Image (cartoon, rainbow, N blue to C red; front, side, top):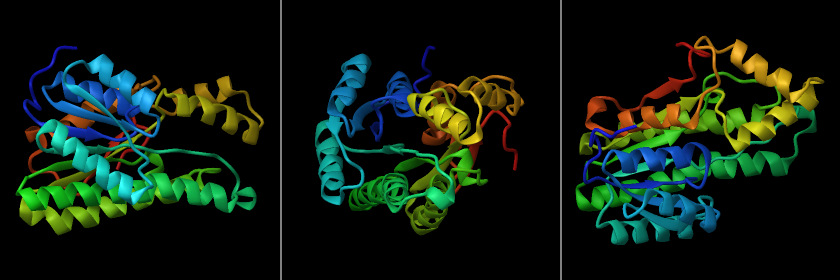
Length: 260
């Protein structure tokens, strides 16, 4: 797909960009003219995506649950890119389990990456924006599960509801500085994470992964599974001047699974 220079000369950081939605966002940002700091907990995957992007891509290893590392990577990205205008806080994990069987480790892991990771990434980005007078833009990856709970996903949903609440609160804090903060809420996206979830959900519900997959499509009005690129296009819109009067929003990107 040809770009339209919607993000020309912008400097962007994408977390969890080594695969899936984050990889698609990094590619879409670069296509639209941005320089991209590609970060992931797996440096090899981040480097592979940066190599795919070419001269506009730079790789960083980032564990978003580590405050010191997050600060260091944002600082390094600013130095490498010559500034920072956009942040897509996308890093996330999931597990599935019934609440009665849910472990503290599962709860803590989902909260640490999905909620705390967004907080730490956003905090460092906003600190930079305020210090430099940058009217920056942040897009946080939430989920369909940030709007409506689902069986076996109570801990994941709680972490993603937290992302939406945090996004709204931060948007109100920093709006007067021209900083915009929004969230995107994907539905059933074809990623390696979804492949794991299909197996988990099938086992928990006594179904085959194929039957679960067919159910996902049947509940999607647009009649197909969502691709990472579908999410990335919406993130580009939220990062661009086309959405210049949007802030504090949690945009459904589910193909109609959820309409509100």
